[in-house]
Image (cartoon, rainbow, N blue to C red):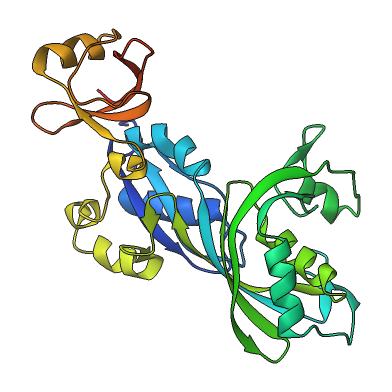
Length: 301
């Protein structure tokens, strides 16, 4: 009996519009099976309740997943005032209620106070670990442990709509931000309680909602064959557009691909750069050294 294939060696990034009700890993596994991909990973978990942009990396693109994990994110969130839940969203059990609903002026002032560099205490229902165990596992057992606050940056936190006890916001924030905690802290500043009723991610680094694909859409495309699916993949360097591009000559590319720092024309004075060969093929990431040469940092060929 022949050995079962481990899947196809494909490389690229798929912009998935994650549906509500699935964990990020469940969504990843479904898409991985559709593509029959040998290697795949996602770029930062979305809550099961949440929808929206979840970049999935296939093959060599998994080498850039860390850059997407570290990237800034944008969200659309609806906060429901009047109740706090165990999970911080509508999937949890109601812990406490209040009849005190804040005015829009109070909410706007609180949102402004939470804009900038702040500290958050991570929620118990999170994937962080305590002594080797996930916090959400402890929370499901009724165990609560102390969590040290972590610094995050909220670049923008703006109210967009009001509908009874629900208020909608746009949030642009740094990596590691818990929007559920942000909503709870917002309510606390206004003397009220709240939880997340809906959450949608709209941007991860250079990627936005343009070009996202739903699971049901991908399932329909899969009926046309693997080539049709592969056409939906973004190139690896699409995740790295925040860094300037440098094109190397043939000889410089040869030495750089063999691990050596090289001198090239058009490099910035400092920082990381995207590296390309003369024919436009993406070579990887480099860093400009103090002497102006470009050293390889993460190569893809």
